[in-house]
Image (cartoon, rainbow, N blue to C red; front, side):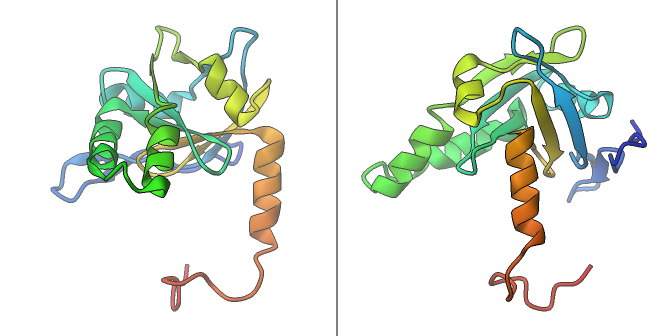
Length: 170
């Protein structure tokens, strides 16, 4: 599963903390949703998504206006942790509504596609041109214009580094 020559990077595999092979999603892929809302997952990500739950995935909303795509086994502990938090706190309850309330189970089909549910497509403003962004244990799915705006904002990074990044270098 090597990355292609279109700006995609990484092979999608790394070693986990126990030495086992861990799936790591990275790189940016510009893609197109078909008329039915199906997304063809790039081949380099299919094995990782299939391995992390037998092709069963969870797509949910993100506060940033994109969608998050998790292999089922990566999503379940996140959901369990979220639901253990007190729903009496309005901020926690809002986050539970967003992440768990919008979570939808989908499956990779034989052609390596997923159907992005209509409600989630509306939430993220997805029409046709989209961007799939590897983020370690998950993928982000962005409307292409929103992604370009996000990148422009990141490049125009104002001033000081956020807390916790002091001394960080590449």
